Structure formats: structure tokens, C-alpha cells
Amino acid sequence: MNQNDGANQNSRDGNFLGVLVLLCGAFLAASAIGSFANAAPAVTAAPVVTVPPRLDIDLNAFDASKKLMALPNGESLAYIDRGERSGPAVVLIHGYTDNARDWVPMLPYLSKHYRLILVDIRGHGRSSKPECCYTRLDFAYDIKLLLDALGVQKADIVGHSLGSIIAQTFAEYWPERTAHVVLVSSTGGAPPDRPRKPPQFDFAAEIRKLKEPIEADSPFMIAWWDSPTPVDPDFLRRQRQDAAGIPLRVWLAVLDQALPANNVYGDLQNTLPRLKAPTLLIWGSKDPIMEEDVRQTLRNALPNAKVKIFDGLGHNPFWEDPRGVAEVVNAFLNSPI
Image 1: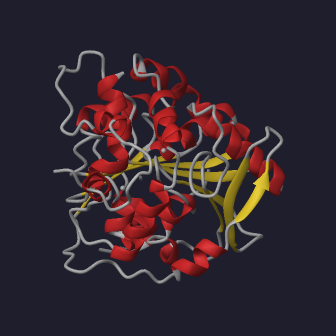
Image 2 (image 1 turned 90 degrees about the vertical axis):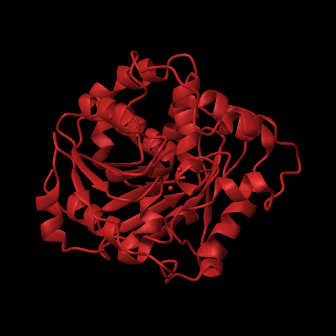
């Protein structure tokens, strides 16, 4: 669905949602809880970053740890199940053209007592790539079936960009299976009275120009994963390579089906009232696709949600300040339901 938006990484995954919308430092966990806000979103100053945040996870070992689960609906979902098996289950859902590796920068900073379940959504990574179907409910149902197979009755659901829409959908349709919800770089859709203007970067048009084989190091793909702040280059290279391996028909199917192009706002707003679980909304202040008006429609639909805005960060704040974002997530997930 991160993924975490100049053509830069901040626009990359969020542009998928934004295009559909337009077309259709570290602090203590205790103080993090106190800095949440509802009507007036809290803002955390961006750290001064001159080198990429260190990746404390071996990427080869991480990639090799994926397992494959055959689901009753005929799909196979790749996933990684790590951490304390007896701890609270936390499902991490990546964004459009990404995979479970999306969360690697933040993993070392998440609480060690969680059971982390990281998925490759259908069509992505090592999961099956069916001819159909790629609606947000299809993605969410896969997650539900995976949790059934793993014997997980209730979980915290964390999603980024497209993954946040999947997380939202899961919580709406299976509230009894949902503990907390964290939506990173998400949207409630463009308000109907929003002035019509062309997107800053029409990635939908660029995606429709792609030809197979997709070249991982083409100018488009480099721009798709570019970042305004340093990100580990090997991490980005692997992300590009994996995305280039996704069949073009899947790129297009997700683009066309994940949200209805003619009624994004109506589709999202129609089901958001079902989301009753405690919810945290995270954005980077410089995310140019998830701009203030599309953030506000989500806040309006979820008036009890906690809000955290990271000043100076973009569409992938958990890549840009993984420790800071993880501390906020830890504090929220440890809060009582």
C-alpha cells in the first residue's frame, strides 16, 4: 500500500494514494504519550541528519527468514514472524510496490516484547501475484486469513501509506480482532470541495508508461525511492530490485483497484466510522501528497485518534527518524485499550 514524497521518497509510496486521491531525535516513551494531541496535532522537530540511519539488521538474513503461508482463498502470503511469541502480536503492513523489508530501519527500536508479524501483501515481495484481485478489502482479508492460520486472535495493526489503508480496512471489518491501529502517512481522501489542481508528480501517468522488463535503476525507479534525507543505499537498491520484479500487470491492478478513482473520498469515509479501536495517526510535516486537507478528512473521521506529526520529515518518517517514530509507536501500543 511506504511505501515513506521534487520526486523523492516522500512522494513515492504516498503518491500512489495521492494520485488516486487526485485522480479518482528521540524522546522517552512516557513523554511521547504526553505529547500526543487530537485537535492540535503534536509536532516533533526533525533531527539533523547528515548520514543514513544505521541499519542494525542483516538484510540478507532478514530476507532469508521469510516463510510462505498457503491461505484458504488460494493465495500464498510471505511473512516474517519474529520477536517474543508470547507477547502482543503487532502486524506491520507495507505500502505500494514495497515489501516486508520496509520496516527494517525501525525494527531495532520497537519493543522487544512484541511478536512482530511482517507481511508481503499480495502481488508484492514473495507473496503470490494473482491475476485478480487487488481491492483494499482483498488485501485486508489476506491479513485476516494469515492471522487465522497463525492462531492470532487479536493484534495491533500498523500500516504505511497503502498499508495504512489496508490496516484501516482490517480494523473496520474485523474490529474484534483489532487492538490498536497505527496509520502512517495515511489519508481520509480529498474533500469534495477541494480546489482541483494537477498533482505535483503524476506518478500514475508515469507508471502507465512502464514497459517490461522494469529497469530497477531507471530514472523513474530512482526517483520513486529517492529521499530528502539520507537512507541506506543498499536498502534502497534492494527495494528497487524487488519492485522491478513485480509484474507490470500487478502495478497497474493495484493502481486501478486499491481505491476507486472516481470516489476515493466517499469510499474511505463510508467505512471509517467502523474503526473503533484506539488509533494513532503519524505524518511527516513535509509530505507533499498527504497534505493538510487530506489529513484533516482523516482526523475529522477519527476525532478520538491521537496524532503525531514529525516536523521536517516526509512520506517515510520511519526511514528518516526510525528511533523517534518507534518510540512514539511503542508508547501508543503500550497504552491501555
